Image (cartoon, rainbow, N blue to C red; front, side, top):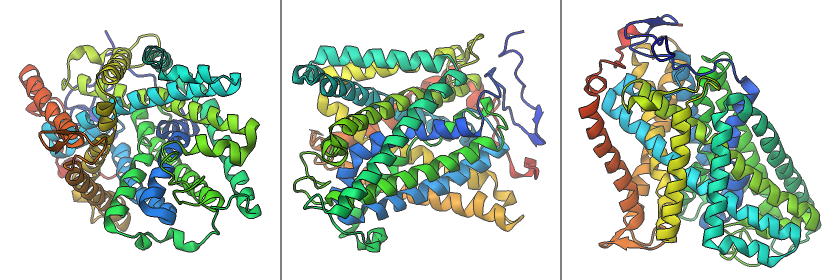
Length: 519
């Protein structure tokens, strides 16, 4: 009997609940523990890469209130993390958002939630591969002392070939399973957090000695989000901040491969969130104290350096030798995230296939490595093809696609948060804990993300948003973002004709509150 043939069928009971069709998928169980799961969550977010690419942009929007905006972006993510924890405790399924929203709202809403996650991840994978490629050649130029070597990144053929090589390597490591992934991640995450800590210490030392004219003294007012000059600036900074936390839920996608699958992934997600917010606050405060948030000289908001802050600050803050270590950390951050970001997309596709929401071939699990083999390989191929085509066609389209990413993130996170409250609605009056963690907190998180979704959608209509290009007078970021969601509706229509049983709710059933039994 094959692994898929041995999966539980509709009506089986798992862990004291009516599972409504929840199935095992043949993944390798007990492959990763609490620490490994938390490391995967941190790695997928890529904190060093996020900081170098968004510190300047955030400072440009909100000035010295950047730490406050980091805290404001952390709040909805923390609230949504509680929803993930509670849903995972009830249904530890690698389909995460897809599976849970199907159980709460039915097959069509769940399918679109899964689509949002998959599309967001493919976009991020292509961006991470491009960043890793650029930093690879930048680092090679720094080590060799040759500007011509660093300039190879500008050669489109060399850039694409290097990018495809990195994607292939990341795909191969992910294909080999959680054990291989975990070992690589310990080294890469440890390296980037260590270098980041050294940067923070040295930046504080520079601030204390007044090494840079643009440096400013610390003030607790930096933590006040109401001091931001305008609501438009605040929402722009908040959107950037939310992007900086995206990816922590990757450790939930490995729940079927984690020791203690009901509790460990949720705890790992919360640990990852605490590590991330601590890293962002420490770095943001130290950088502002050292060089300020202005747009002159080394100021974080200087338009000439704001898109890659660490490239500008590495030498002045850390010196020529340790400065190279910061380049290595950014490369390690992008490479580590490139590898672990395959985890959620491959496992979501696997789950959608196992529940007949996608073609059955995607449910194939590698008999040797116990991983979603075909889904991982297809994700790698899709990422490589997407990045190659976008790079050859138009750099502006590639940039606008990345800007549209925020729409996808808010879309599926908000749906998952609302799904938690609705799924557990019969339990909310059972205790104060259930009311807070299964109802109030997820709903608040969902509302905040839905508000950001709406504001982003409104802003995207303006052609000035993103690269500044337009389609028939409408911003290209809006066209891409909404177009990708409508593409999902079209693909769902095709799958509805091919797999009517899933869309009739016969495979993964929408669960009623009366079936939910207290743990």
